[in-house]
Length: 259
Image (tube, rainbow, N blue to C red):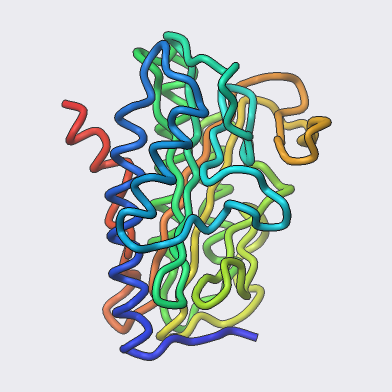
């Protein structure tokens, strides 16, 4: 069942999303050669707690960190480690959530470590473009799968494949609420979109079209043939004026500050 948010709830979610996006961009700017993924996790937890919020992922279903840091062929849920040292040419997905005043925020972006290889840059651009395409389909009266279809079409036209095993989701008082938002499927199916719906649209794409695997740690999802993957996630609200991006465009903000 869709949990439509009141104006007051939306204000809280908007404030939480703004806080989260600021922290996530700051963490992403620290993803440089020689830094470990655990160092990024410590920064993320420190900055989340400084706002008065709690890290949403730490302890969630047993997850052992505040940040998901997934490098190269790791799709998502990569566990930060002091042994994982970032190197020139890596690409890294950073996924972060927080809980404040009873409501969650959740967002992710993939950034290059130094300069990304050409195929990595193309993949990041296509994945982020697909996210924007999916968000543009989040209109009152539409259906959940309108987003799914827009995302998959955009990715495939650029020669890549979406990850089918993981989905976007509603968000609010729970980290994961209805509806689930796959990254593939025909349009015109699923729940009808209505004003007050808040969701985390979450796009993952990769260079192969093989099923994902889960590593022995029980968390880290990787591409089937070891190729690169990229991951972007923004929180949106469905409004009478169209989709509102509550997290305010974390990838665009990252590049603006990086320049």
